[in-house]
Image 1 (spheres, helix red, strand yellow):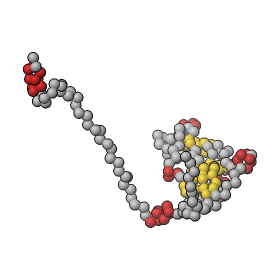
Image 2 (spheres, rainbow, N blue to C red):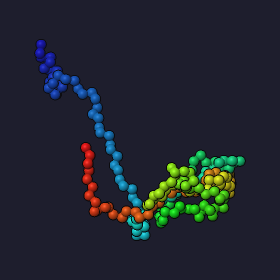
Image 3 (cartoon, rainbow, N blue to C red):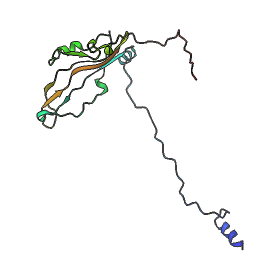
Image 4 (cartoon, rainbow, N blue to C red):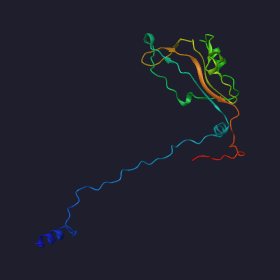
Amino acid sequence: MCLPFILSACATNKGDFGLEDVHAPQSEPQKPKFQDEKTQPRTEEEVSAFMQPGLGASIEIPRRGTGLAGTLSEERVALTPENIKRIGGDLDIPYVKDIKNHNKYTGSLIHSHDNSAGDHRKRDLEYVRSGWVADANVGLDFVNGDFGNGITRKVLFGSIGHVYYKGVQPAQAFPASVKATYKGT
């Protein structure tokens, strides 16, 4: 009576009574190999400008095409790193002269932190200034050019201005004379 069991165990060449494994062995999925992007080394001028301490950046407030009367219509205007400009210097409101010299200037220059809006807008910061400056009453502006698809005019709408953040006396080293201690749990 045990002879059939012994013969079946010997017939499988494994010496046991179990069944053959019917599942295919699963292999590990290949992991992606990450690499740094190959870039050109910076020139000495770029490196020296990059290493200068500075604090400040600005971007022009985008104006988009309205699509009036068959002109170019823009659902959105992309903000790219190329639009961001480094600014520095004193804490005066930047771009006031540029806005006043714009051909569509209406004489209503406003700033995000002017003192006309009450105490909650007043800021007395010693080292930084941020906000926006604009001529809010510009309205429509007509631009001629070739915008593709036979469109030769663009009607822009929005304020002429800039959003900015700037500061003076940026830190050039870590504070070495002060000892910091952690008092936590």
